[in-house]
Length: 195
Image (tube, rainbow, N blue to C red; front, side, top):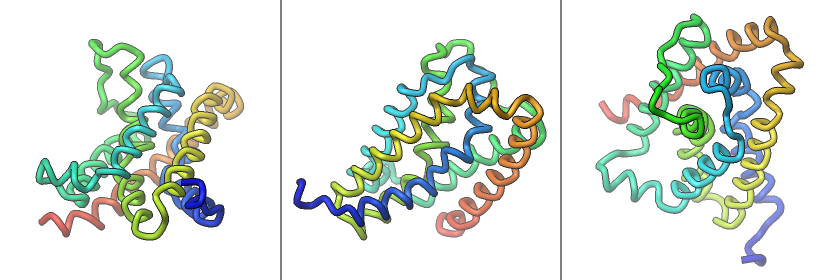
């Protein structure tokens, strides 16, 4: 396996995944989820996200195929969840009701682990990367990204204190609009394939 590792491939795959996962841009969503659930459990979210993406990297197409679902349908489903999150952030409304039966340990898995970190965009990208790079290099790139995700999730309270309530409100609105644009782009790019 070590002979298959290529620093250039790892760097390129890391950068592509970093841009798609966009954990920095997701900070307002992380803060919003944290407000609702009380805590976000950075390690648990990072591990669940990693397992989802590794599973999808290895057998994503086949898994979706078993259920008769294609990548495009999966992407549209993810975009609808992103739509709802964006509307919450922009309009300050509550669409995702807190599930009283869920413990704090599981409440933040959705939407943070899926679809924010391990979303349709990340999974589609992983399948695309498989066509270009060797599997070990993609796995290393994914591990690097998940380490960065963990650090950002762990530092959310400090980032929250740094921004303050006013800064958080502004960032939420701005990133809500960006998230809405991403959701629309993801929806538009994939919905024509399933109609």
